[in-house]
Image 1: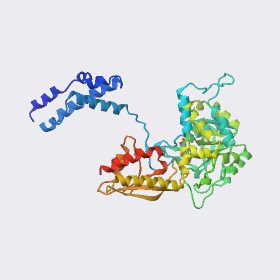
Image 2: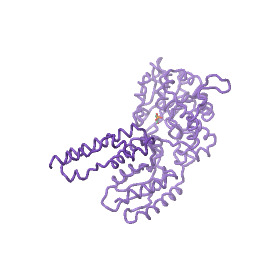
Image 3: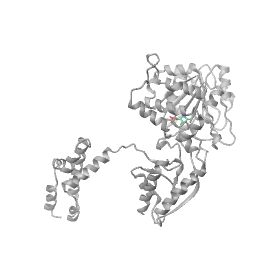
Image 4: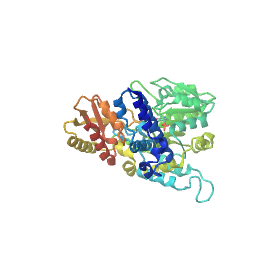
Length: 475
Ligand SMILES: *Cc1c(COP(=O)(O)O)cnc(C)c1O
């Protein structure tokens, strides 16, 4: 190609200032941060210059747009892209209720309102309004936690991993903690009991075997340097077959004999008996407290359905020690968590209200007939709008609880299955759905794209319908 043509193109390329001064961008001046607009224009021009330099034919050059107005438009698109939030809402069509990668629990409306209220205004976060003295941020939830669980005291930190670490550090630093080999759990995202233990400064003493641990195993390991008997709820796996583990009350009884505290990391921490709703019975926090465990820790955003938090409940004596630990200051919750947790716990004052208003509980207890109705309505809409493009069916399937909770629980659900008729991979459809303005995360099984309506909110249905139609129409 004649290089003079290339030179002519380079010369015709508008300058950054020329684009910034064009009418198109002057009209929207002030609507977007000027810095972002400047950067976008600069990038647009330099990428165009690179394209001209790299062009291999005159034809290719002819396709390169160098009009000022067009470049301004392109720069504005780029600026909008930069300003779009990275962390955005997605539609969870996987049916996994506590999807850790998708943010675990959705907050109840009341909790969202409380967060909004307390973050827009000043609050009495650490002010005792009755005395005018400095108050404690934990006081806003402590009483309610005690009343709901039956514990004497409570304190809340960032997440349950922090809660476990804090409890170990407070009660067992440089001393030994006895735990069964069947309970050395790893939770997704690198929470491993042995590692948390060493971080906390406590020494791990493993007893028993993977499948069986007896009370005498704990007893034989007790010595002068023992600080605690620890039980960890195997929340994300089950050992079945020839197995036995020591119950919380047996551990408590052993601890009393040797003046040692018995502590349980409960993981999920459910406050209502889920077996009433056809789900597997998980030990509730109340039951653990009633068994006499000195301290119990659990998550705020698993089955509880609240904000990310680590809740520690137990005997006043230990809770006081935890509150005095300097680490508590480093792991403390912020006012938004405090507000969301208080509002969520208030809903538990009436179980029916909790099940209706806390999204996690509501999704876990939706009757299958309701799911069938929702799946059929979605399928009917899609059949009407995607005639001939996709095979659409409603099929039986299972949803998962997720978040490392109730791993064996398979909740019957109804799935909308979409199978493209043309030779196109379902993986491609999945990827396109992820790139929608409100991304849709779905399941794939063989060549079927599966939509589990259990985790799709009613207000998201029109968006979901539109996205599915848009994506599959292209095939
Ligand atoms: C989930 C879980 C944790 C970690 O809780 P986060 O709130 O995610 O930090 C710790 N222990 C057990 C048993 C768990 O199930």
